Length: 102
Image (tube, rainbow, N blue to C red):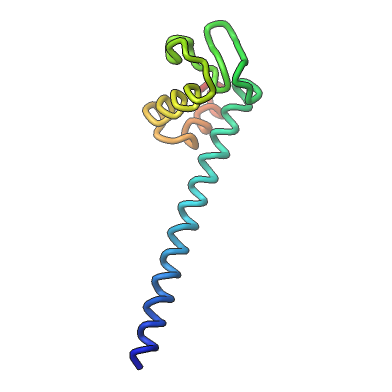
């Protein structure tokens, strides 16, 4: 009888854990998809794209990038910008779809 309780508890724990992973994976996939969308519409996903003062994959200003146009800095700066202004890449993509700007 104790063995059945242990198995039940283990199965319950695994089920809950898998549920949490699935939710997290879906959220991550949604964020990644939104981030890819922004990169595609802003620059064709090119780190070397330029449009006036806007530079790189996410078309950030040269001021925001502080002269460091590396891919790593573009990713880091874009994440900071998006999470501070929109709260998520999904929200940023929805904003872009509504107003055609990032």
